[in-house]
Length: 140
Length: 140
DNA sequence: GTTGTTGCAAATACTTTGCAACTAT
DNA sequence: ATAGTTGCAAAGTATTTGCAACAAC
Image (cartoon, rainbow over all chains, first blue to last red; front, side, top):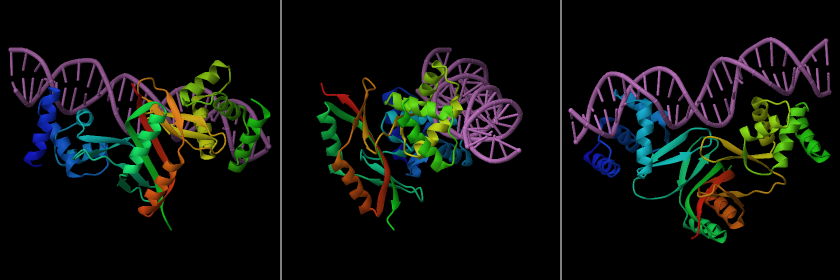
């Protein structure tokens, strides 16, 4: 990947007091390259096929760091594993999952966000984060 | 449990072409008894402590049947396991999870439901089910 | 050179499954 | 009698961890 991705990564590693390694860069590059929702195994296998020396353990460990530093977003599909996607800017979105095709559509709706805050507030809480997934089927 | 719970269960078993057994009744009774969000292990252990002859396998198998027939609702907390709660009527609700205490608050908001339908529709889909969890902290 | 990082394989946590014994009908 | 159900232990799936070899600084 380009220079940009290593600058971003380096910044995160510095704030965490961690070292820069090929493996960490490779995992981050791979997540950036295909900006889709992928599981750890998929990322691992893609790297292995590219002859990059990396292990599953390192993939998981790196994703943890990236997630903690908001470079990666983790999402739970409900079938055991987790999917990951890059957080390019700080844009937030929720997911619609097509039950027929498995396609994942991202959406964002301001009213929805506000409504959640309002509901939480009515109960004396404030929303720190949320999980919102619509399992849908095509109309017709 | 009373007669009511076995009538409900029997109906489900009949539509599924399954037999009525002590174990299935015991699992369903236990879920009904404590109407809270509990994991499979908790349900299993409670039954064992009551000297009811049941296995983990049967607990999981029974929950599957109950879930498929909408007597039980499954919810994913995101930490690996699933929590289950009875679906007494057909009432639907979402969850607010307190990040400080782990307390789970149920909520239902009509506007929220409608908004989701509207968003899906705009993308050419209709919502079959959804997962909506707010991870919250107390105000002040 | 020191300390963090890696890969490996074993461990973990939750859930599912094959199969022989058992039980509802 | 027969076909479905159970318990057990083994297998499965996704992820985490201990540790010795290795690499970054």
